Length: 243
Image 1 (cartoon, rainbow, N blue to C red):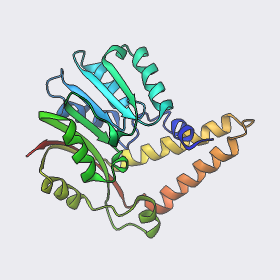
Image 2 (image 1 turned 90 degrees about the vertical axis):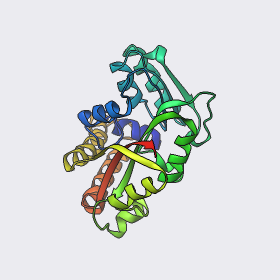
Image 3 (image 1 turned 90 degrees about the horizontal axis):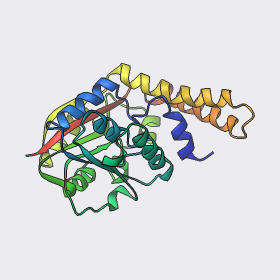
């Protein structure tokens, strides 16, 4: 089974592919969309869940999303039609870093997708190119909450701590106007949802040729989390304006 398919199964019960609960997502969108009639762009949108939630609660909003996964975009298009917002959503299949648009956007979202641009600051540079005057950026990035193990560093790379991460953003010319640090409950709920969904799928499909592979993937990922990075990994979302 492809990694893309495994990811789709893992996130079946947690469509926001980051350690955030529904209330946190709603608050971040409220701060990113103060008017309710903005034009929104999500760079690395996956199944477009951020955009779908914004569109559902704001009937005058228009949104576009960019992702390389055709399966994720197909899922997003179907969900948009089912939720009655398909006419206000445009999805593009291409590398987010290569996306160009003739229009600018009032909110640019990139949560958990900074790897697509080569890091936090390159992601902000890309977002700046799409931002309308006075616009906002909603970005989500990992950080080390405490000293990581060598295994955690091997998995996630050379992350900064929380204070350094915010300092880097401010030094780059941005002002945080809202922020959210994922709680232990959010972090744990996300991990249990992902690896539990995978394990359940494998147990529910014992005759599928991929069942053993999926169960092994769930077991390995759960072990890496519990033994490797649970005590050190953190996740930060910021709503930013240009200084």
